[in-house]
Image: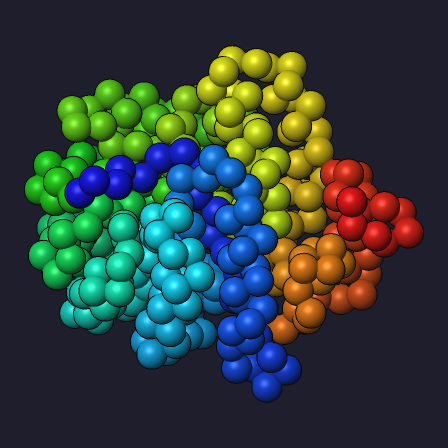
Length: 312
């Protein structure tokens, strides 16, 4: 386990053709664009941002193969483990490990919305760890939805599955978020908290997160890296200035319904001339023209687009 997840880790998007097949050439170009930002810690694939819920096992494997080929080892690959059951999760973990991934991002299984016991959580992660051996990032959802893990469950998980070395924190509760940052990052070995509170990233990072893992890094990896570094350097003035550029984008990307967040990011990349189209797979549907205009306005406010619609 040489790679311990920390720092700035963008989660990339997955372009599609109009017939909903994967646009591999555009995906390669997107990977090149994101990884052009120097100082990133890793790249995440087969997650919410790549519409993993709508991708088959074979497609996930192909996404990994393309990513490995395109990156040529320049950055570690974090591979999402999105599955309803533990056996399928372990199968994906084996594939990701064999395919050259450096860490796994484990999503909570859907049945947990009906209730969970700590032993169930440990069993799920243990099967994934046994199938892989790679460092694991546990995706921490809001507790109210049933898929988030209570503190005691996470503490038990860290003890019984030591491969869990970080959480991607989307608890959506600033008080719990700070408690997790303070508690988990004081453990030995440390369990890093990677913020995915991208709607209030500045506030989250100031609490002391050791990194961030965010889909909006597919559009603004450079701004996220600059913000993270400014906070790490305790340069509050610079951090506030960068956040002023990020804020309008956060407002449009993370407006309700949240399910459209990565849909909107695709539209942003089309407006910036970095994607040829913003096709999403059902059940997602294209956002409205009015929303696209709001995205364009936010890109202008962020200094990424001229009022005439030209990328800067």
